[in-house]
Picture 1: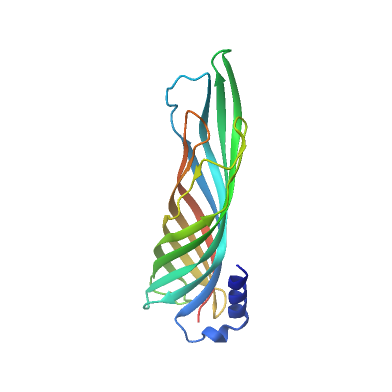
Picture 2: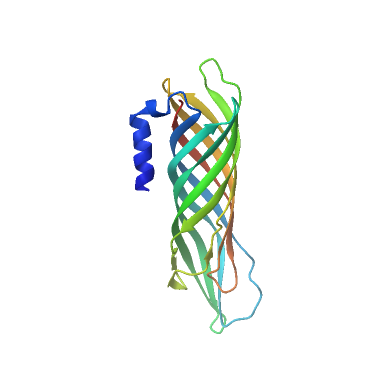
Length: 221
C-alpha cells in the first residue's frame, strides 16, 4: 500500500513523467449498498432454532489505478483497492420447549485487498471534452482478513463467512474535465458478489449483488 501511495503521489506531483503517454493514473472512492437475503427455515425440528431475516450491507472501496488507451474509444483499467464491508440483519431464536421467541441482530464486518481490472468504451467527446462511458470489470483476486462477527445468539466468532475471490461488475459513467489534465468521473455500478453467511442453524444469509457510485479523479496525459 505504501508503494502504491508513493507511485500515485509521484505521478500527481510530476505529471510530465506520463506526458504524451496513453497511460493515465487515477484515484477513486466508491460507497456501496448491498441487500442481504435469508433463506427459508430448513424445517428440521430442534430444541432451539435460530433463523435470519433480510438486511442491508454497506461498504466502501478506495484505491488507485492505471488506465491504458487501446484506441480512441477502448481502454483497459487495472489497480489495487482496499474494501471494507459492514453487514447487518435481524435474527430470531425460538426455544420450543418453553415456547419462547427472542429477536436479535447479526453484525459482520471485514476488510479485503482487491485487484480489479476493467475494459471500457468511451463515446465521442463533446465540445467541452465531456464524455459518457460503459464498461465491464472483474476482480482478479482478493485477500481478506478474518471477518468480525457479533451475533445476539451465537456470540462472537470468526467463522462461517464465505466471500468470493472474484466478482463481475457492469458500470457506466460521465466524465468532466476540471482542468486541462484533471478529469472527474462519476460511475454508478452493479456487481455480482455471491457472499454467504452461515451463522444461524436453520437459515443461510446471502448477498448476491451490490450497487454503488464510484467517484474518480484521473490525469489525462
